[in-house]
Image (cartoon, rainbow over all chains, first blue to last red; front, side, top):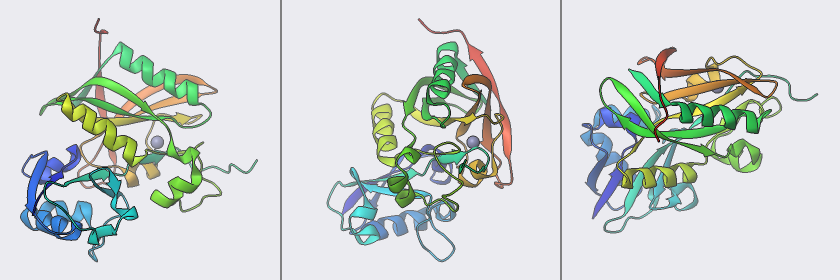
Length: 99
Length: 160
Ligand SMILES: [Zn+2]
């Protein structure tokens, strides 16, 4: 079934400069596999070398984090929207905060 | 590339850094980008999810929780991020970058910043020394992820 995958700004350069891509898939895993087959440069930004979704990548189905659904086996319905949400984290120096 | 920000945007980032001191603050930069520059249209302050260590640890575990906290780490709630992004898209804006503060630390990216950085985004850092905002810089990750490149900040007069 047709679903839409929303591509965040830093990854558009690897996805033909598009901000959203329509894919035929029945699960989240299938959708992401379809996407990275079509745009292979996206693969290393989304998956580790052994094919697992990177820690720094959040995937939302509509407004829900797939971690709390059935992860990448979450089933899809017509016109679902999958959002790739990059994990945004940082910091300063490492210090002892025990004092 | 350069990053164009109005006075009011710089003021709002500095004020957020001072307000959340001694913790790290963070927020999103919304705007428009072409091949030469990113123009910030709106600065959206967000909560540092490291304030809620349990939830933050679930989303992005820290290697040394005894030495890492909201004092020296930030994490943006992905759901908040998604909401801001959706709202922005509806108005024809994109996420062009993020900002965070370095309490009592220079405005230079840390190794932790680099490891967690995404390509293309502008990462603005404001140093806050004893509660007072100091240097403000902007950085873009190098293509090979080996370092950050400092980016020119073009300060524009505030729009009315
Ligand atoms: Zn930092």
